[in-house]
Image (cartoon, rainbow, N blue to C red; front, side, top):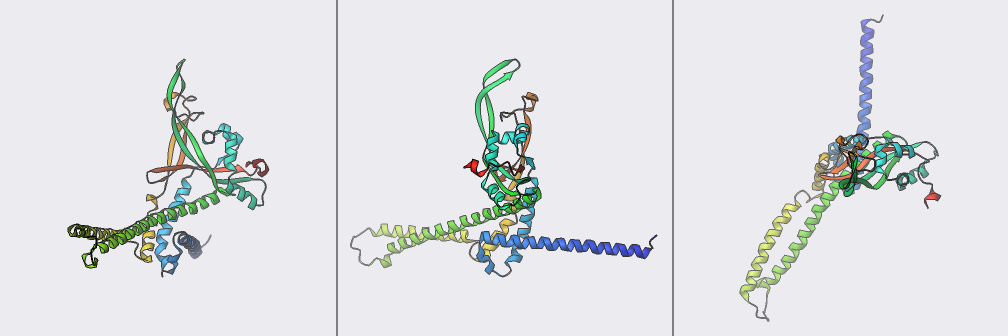
Length: 343
């Protein structure tokens, strides 16, 4: 039976091993954040590298966005198999695609074709992220109510368009990892677009101010010289005063709009602030809808067969704006349409 010193030694060695693993994990996390920082700078503004300490200033915001994007990637349901049997038997797959051929066309995306050309394996499964935009429309149809057929019944039909299969890979974890970085790219794109909008407003105000200043100078009594046209001095003075007032207003608006973007340091601070709150820019929300085999929206009280099946779909959101449905899918390498048949 081991003595107390043996047990203490085992405990110390165990603690040291756990600390070593934790330290290795931290180094791996730090390395990932540093790579993500460079990715963010490349996409946003490479000139930010001229600023001393730009990595340190971006580190917390990028780490927070990266963690949030990993959480978003984890919310995506799946993997769901895409093949002929699943189209016939899986309510989600059947709802997403109007036909098996349409499903194969979605699988045969440019990203999948490139991936299959670049990988050596010819058999086995692939994974990827399927995106599709739900579209609801109202139509008049027929329904069975009791033993009578009711005509011209208003129905809501949900269809899915703009299918796209992206981020193909050999395992689901790898695909989710790709999705995490792709979501970070989206956040950076949103942030830089927001900054670009402000820069555009600054340029517009600068141009307006320049034009009004030119007009004011032309109306200035000190710069008139000889007035060959004999224009009304009172009118010119009023126009000059109006131009002066407009200049003061534009200068005030320009000063307000320039706040936060006067220098490259301001640009970095603005980008950091936007990345610190990724949840305000991007979200994935689970939505439920009950559809029958014809994609008609049904109520649960309508019965089991006729009432359809409740589907849970993950949908991307930016603020209050809803986007496409996202689904992690699995498909055979033989499922995409061959190149010769496609052409």
